[in-house]
Length: 96
Image (tube, rainbow, N blue to C red; front, side, top):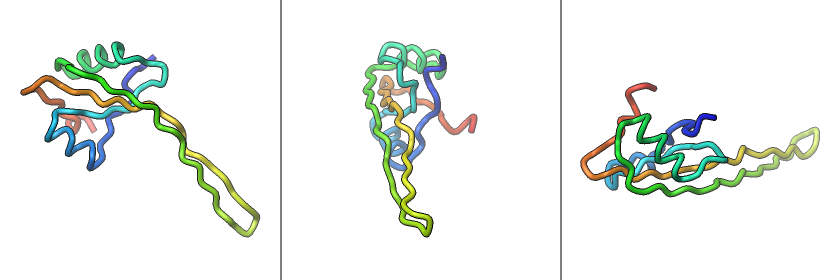
């Protein structure tokens, strides 16, 4: 079971990492904060101070087409915001 799925590289997450030393990751739905902390520390070699998690709900959309109403949804996922110790950083752009 892989705990860290991928880093979140959006404008908001990038500015948060530059200003506050916080990095965002998509993580496994079953993982807890202790497992996420251990996975980030072993993968990137940094010391983690704080982990915040949230479950992101799926977005539901419907379109009206010639054949009728088409409905769909995105997948739900779990997001983790990891705060790294002062002076340390994670380089997410090295292995893209």
